[in-house]
Length: 443
Image (cartoon, rainbow, N blue to C red):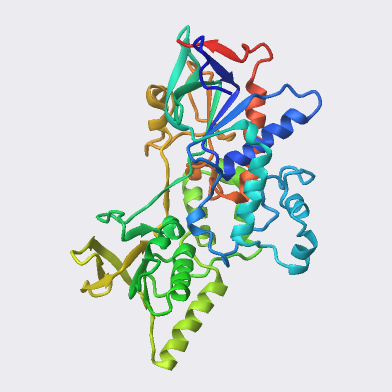
């Protein structure tokens, strides 16, 4: 699957996926299963991933952290319960199916689920080009109509391109650092926790500061408190305490596939209302068991008179910089009074979430063909396809960045299986049986 052959031809695919995290992995499986059904016109696909191998939030694969979604919301089950790519098939292959059943738990360890994702990715690796970073997209125009895109890539062997009749963009989320704070050797985003923690081996850190009120912040706080038994760990957040996630049965219906239809069809004011009602199912909330564990630790330390866990509530990070002594000067503002204080820490960790990636810069000159709403956001059809004018037949589909149009599951695992099935069905339905062969001359 060479990007460019010696004669200057470029391979043409019905689908080129940009990024290969869980969403596009689910799509690759959907392509494989679509092509395996008798009588189906096969869809040709390739996925381009800048990492050298499959990996998903490796920096937060804490050994005791569990998934926050049921194992049944894996890559395939909600779309195809009989799929050989299911989590249950993975367990059978790993000889742990009975053990998992006896565990009586719907929520596997995060490291286990990551192993499942790697297992599934290995089954479709003939569709993936790892170590390929997408540099840009050039529209292929014939008779004034955008019929395809040339996807430009860099890799260890140089540069190349792939021609796509359809793009599926799944570039994930961008880590968000508080304004005025820059990442450094002592200031990390939570996604880099395990990647960076080895730097502290052989040292004796005395204080960590963790900013954030969500699941990642609480997990990082608990992890550091255990890992460094002589260090203080200071959690900073604007609330009075960590807020529990609403995972009740009725509230969880916001993650149902049918909820996407409801949300998509709703007027803007109802979309806002639904998001406000149910944001506590996913945003800046923590599993109740972890909240109770942190409270137990805090109370136990107060009783014993040896406090290492400090939860600094109703406060925010006002600034941070590395001092001359190699430590971080962290400025914290109390929200009720405006008073500021400074803590010196060995490391500041910002568990401050992620932002969706704007797809338009990737599209370059082609971006002008796609519609935006009054807020500058992409206008997205129900099948996750960017809305375009009649001068475009090539499709651009988004896996993520569609929360404003499709609701809370826009980039979540909860709906990955169904979302991917809808995308492949849309692409297959739009492809003509007489489409050109698999290579074309470069422009």
